[in-house]
Amino acid sequence: MPASFLGSALRGTFFLAFGLWWSVRYPLKYLNRKGAVEGQPGRGRAELFEGAVKAFFALVGILVEQFVPSGPHLQLYSPKTHSWTDLTHWHYSTIYLFFLLSGITDVVSHSPLKLPPGLERLSLTLALLVEVSFANTGDAVLDQHLHSLLVMAIFAGALCAFLEVFLQDHIILETFRTSTFLLQGSWLWQIGFVLSPPWGGPGWDDSDSSNLLFLTMCFCWHYIGALVVVATNAVASRCFCPTLLELVTSKQTSQLGVSVFLLGCPFVCSRTA
Picture 1 (cartoon, rainbow, N blue to C red):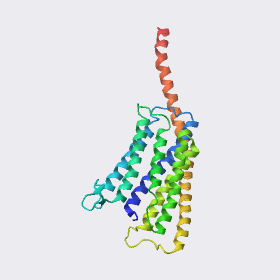
Picture 2 (tube, one colour; picture 1 turned 120 degrees about the vertical axis):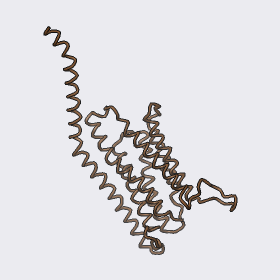
Picture 3 (tube, rainbow, N blue to C red; picture 1 turned 90 degrees about the horizontal axis):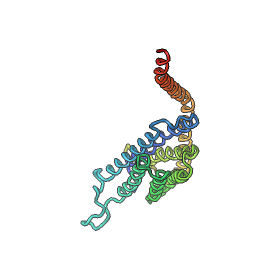
């Protein structure tokens, strides 16, 4: 059973939002490390915010999957029909559940209850692997082809996240993971348009083999678009970050000057007296 357009769009928006956020955040973090201002107070606020947003999005996804009019409403097995209830909604709820756990791990990892380094990336890896395990569920050839391409994006992101467990703050891995999230998000939107068009009517012709070839090319174009977004935001960060660093440095210098002045005033006054 193909997913609905709204379901695909919701999941795609989740990954696009994080991909866009990371495409700005990671270049700035890298440049800040080079500028030696990473130790500023509030460094962990971005991670806390990111984890909270991830957990919120995942919780909303679970509630939507469960309580839409056609949803199971938390009923897994129907005693009347002696059969499982809406397993499609349940399997998407399971995916969201693991991303909810990943968001909670992000928050706890950067709270006073310090968790081992890399645990937040490990939880993200598990969430992506769970998503991979549910990716190919359709019977139609077109559905399977679309989701097999999606699996490539998911698995690439999971591999990056797993490597980041051991290679933390690695800008190449962070950038590649960002591109895979952008690809996954845009491709989920593409899946929605192909299988369940929002304007109604049937999806693309499953018997036309040229559709498979076109969608394979389209998948590559989606990734090129993701790389363009990452590169554009990286260049923009490189252009604007020196100004931000200069402001931070000048602010630190002025604060240091004020502190020295205040500390030196009593000494000067005593010598004058």
